[in-house]
Length: 284
Image (tube, rainbow, N blue to C red; front, side):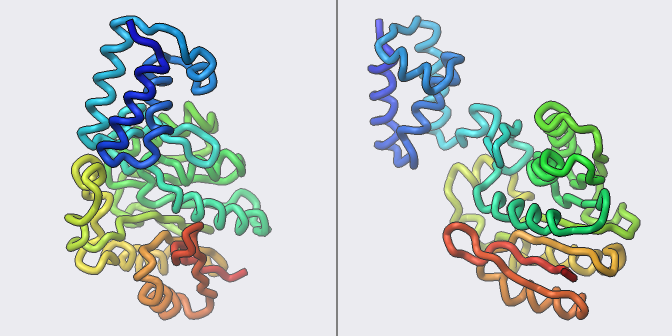
């Protein structure tokens, strides 16, 4: 017989040996998930004995994590902006950097006079950006766009089950080709990693997350450049565009935006790591 404490400590050590960051936290989450309890309950019953079946389930999850399968895919969800969103290998796992994008858009919407603005979440993936905004601004008109049907299915589940708001539409399409304007706001976290850098990514990223959602082409700006060009024809005269980027792309993206929208203001904001992460094009 084995206790929660014994398997928890052995899991932490094993994760450390395999260079898993946040080994203590991940051990907690995996055990709590397997035992169908909360983290506080896990530590509150630290000396409880687990069954052979529970031990077998935990060992299976541990093996998957050591094999570099991302924790979010193992658990089937990822916390983002205060909500748990379903994730699977069809979509990227939400990152903290993208919360910075959402925070900036929230501040923009709080100062926007437009009632019920039309917002496009382009390359929506699991729907975390649009869903988080809809949760705070339930009267917006949200259009979630992705080229992946599987991603749209997941977005639909997340908004319906987590946000519980039906004020949205799903569009299967390549960037903005299926959209007619005008729209008030465009938000996009598109693939922006240069192709030659994909091989340098962590194993759990390059071997498990969808490469199509990571690879931004030769310089990482292939899709972002296309989006900016397409935005010109559908963005309202006083509309706004928000993009998550690679820090090295700041100057190129700012220049492209300013040349395309000469009457707008372009501003880049840093993330919590003080890296240039979000470029905003506004008229405010």
